[in-house]
Image (cartoon, each protein chain N blue to C red):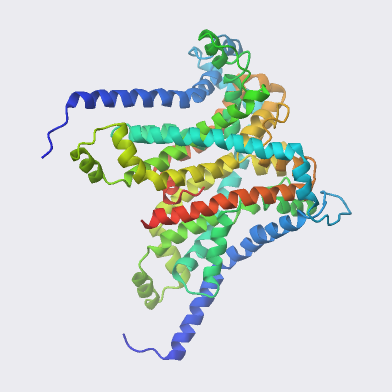
Length: 301
Length: 281
């Protein structure tokens, strides 16, 4: 290539920088307006007693955070969120892994199975909630009719405080299982077939032995990745609670996000809701960071 | 050479796997079956035999008509269309140039911007929504298309996804196009964007599904029935007078579930590609 004079090169670099900046400008502006500034405001609000529409408000330091520690319903909401995650995540991950292993060997029906198991993730939840409400109804629900036919007692799935939260989490798993299945199928596609052949030549039988000693260790990073992704989604469960229980019965399904919704938009306690939001943000951001590190590894292996 | 595997166990295994898969598929499809069957039946039959087959197709038409009469169903669907289509176009209009600049141009603060985009991916939308709601409320801008659309115009996910795609586009072609006198915008729109069509399709399905189905934000900012998005409208319907009349309610539910389901079925390859490409939702 012919030599370009330094001034000309500098000028073209400047032009490129200007163009780059101009193209990114709308995104930069919106990033400042919709993410950075709001986050700073939430953080600031969390140290105040600001209430929507109130003329006077004051800095209360760590008051809101202290209030969380003394609020049984806030602590309950944290506990309920953890229970929800601890039921929905293992259920959807184990089912997804099983489905992926079964689907992987299917040739003709593979696409059809993928679509069927993914359907719940794409369906408007409130529509499906009305269906679940009926199916799980204590008196008229067909599921209870079947339970009675099997000789098992009637269960008030959504109206008994003992069963409402696990029921919501199980419905959450129903929604999440398509996501975990598809991610596991992608992970399994990355496990080289010749490793299986080698294992077979080494006399390792089919089934559990080979699964536990060959497939699962190779799938390790995928498992971790799926668990983290699913946990983030489960933490943000809201529609099922808003549509099916509204936090009840007796507050037994109030999760952290639902509590934030109530405090901010029903009781207009913005300061307190902001402190709860910071807690929520910290939990999700932590999992997201782990996810990004893992995703990076998955892309580059 | 390995001896061919005994066909018998293989066949039994295949039958067994398909039996398990079909059983679980049935479980997943159970709510859909009830939804469809209920919309096709008269009220008296719904409770006596929940999974009995319908015998009068006219009832479905009647239920759909009653759903449209009970609530402004057409308006809900129109709102859903305006919000999802408007958002998708605006999201791409913001994300495409930014992703192109991040992938192919050198400018000051580029790595800081990318770091911010990645950080923004970790922020659950419900957190910045709090001050955005306060501002919208003080501007008296709630209960409008603006309130429904504006907070989501920036999609860090779209920028991240498109940047990864655009990076794969060969630099030599861009250099050659520049020498041929193409402007940067022309290069972006006529060369780079078409090459990333599958990724854009994947994002489109994500965005449409997410915003058509979103309940959280509409529940907060929308108060009138005329501004309700499909899920919120259905919630109004259920909580209203006809809420225990399952026939029309399920007909309405089907109308609201169907459009996204159709989009997903048409573009499921892209959707699944998008999901596995980053795993970020």
